[in-house]
Length: 388
Image (cartoon, rainbow, N blue to C red):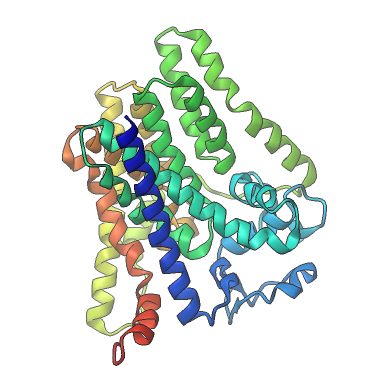
């Protein structure tokens, strides 16, 4: 037992070290040593005057990416300093308080330490995700080194690259499977409570546990799992009270979003062969997501009412109804949002299920990794004379 735990700790530390090394190299050689570039702040949006002293790297002629908003939230998690005015959708993004809130707490509420604390929290979840995955693998009779695969999961890659909060839910999804397998209800309850504060998708894990217990007529357990959503409900209420209304047409006709994306490929400004290769990986990722949708429906048809099976089915249903165009257009968008759906079948394969259950995740990962290509070339030019 001690050996397995030590191996998992080593795996987690190695995973965090690998991702930190990548961050260090890309910041040093692509962004002139300015770590704030990881927040991907766009020049087309206003910057909070209170943070002007941070010398935030701003990407020219760009609206930036989601990490910039979570950066602001980490500086003002309780909505006391007006930074929500610089967040595109405060009512939506402030609900995802786990990562920015932990960063603020780790910094002791001191503004000058918030950024460093935020980077640390992201790497801490990288450590935890790999640690939990290593333990899960060892418990299934596999090598603890499988935990290193956590570094290749789409939302992990994206969070490390652009400081989005999705890495937390990816790590907690592994914990969700692990603590069920180990029959540790208290640890599972904490995991569910944290997942609901990481991103709204985390509530699907809570719902899956409640439904599984209700079907088995274990009403006390169902009530216990329902109670894990209370912190999120309280926080959502606080956010709603202190932010302007938000509405978006996220849901639509079944499969409308993914079908539209398949029929309207992105045009890339690349040589023909390169554009064809990138577009091919786009379609491979979309096919992987579609396979995950169908797998979720198959689990319903097979009447798999386990917690993990129900979570997969519910996530598949949410993805099938996801119709907002920009959620599908961005190749950092849908793989990140749907990572829990891609992960759960893969974790089932790790536990001894059919190997092809891992296919959706494996099909989506290459396109996300390809996004790091320009940065990798920038690093290579500095490390290898004549490269690029």
